[in-house]
Image (cartoon, rainbow, N blue to C red; front, side, top):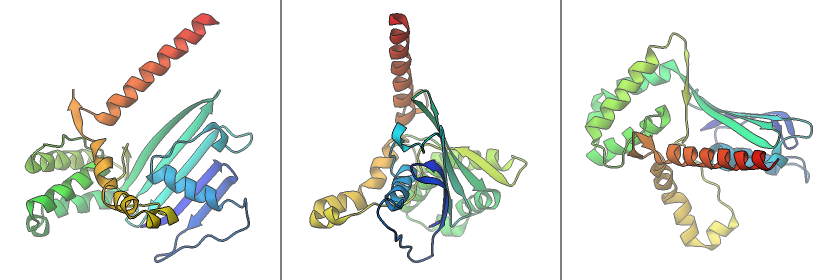
Length: 234
């Protein structure tokens, strides 16, 4: 699934590109050579791990992380440390051919042959990938209409690569260690419930906004309030 990751200014990874093999990739190195940092990069990309001040390479105030996937799309995350205030943005770059293939698939006999549950699962996966928000109780045909409308909007762009603002990426990446296999319930929770927990963030709960968007707005309002109080005291 992952073809390549590129990292700049994350801990000891000043400017690193790693190509992944199709079957298995093993990282080998001495202590403090950056192996754990590579795993942390993957957690930032796929497991909502936050970037901290200490994660910036010494003397650097910007971190770039990109990952290429097998469908020729890539995710890009960028962080800037502005006086200990970390700002970031996340985007997916989609290949135009890939978006067109999704459109053809949704209008194909293969998609029509799926069960209702199968159609819904596929639609939710595609919707999250394309940045389409939806409620948990939305009808499948309505969600399909939204997705197709989104695709038409994207395909009208006059360049081969389509940049999509994304909050959640529906990639099946799991981080398992020895503790998961010692605790079987933890193992099943990681494997089977992770997708459900991710999908909750993309549900609309009012004013057409997702849970994640509303929480971010509230946190930003809280942050601005704290900043104003500090400035008053100064």
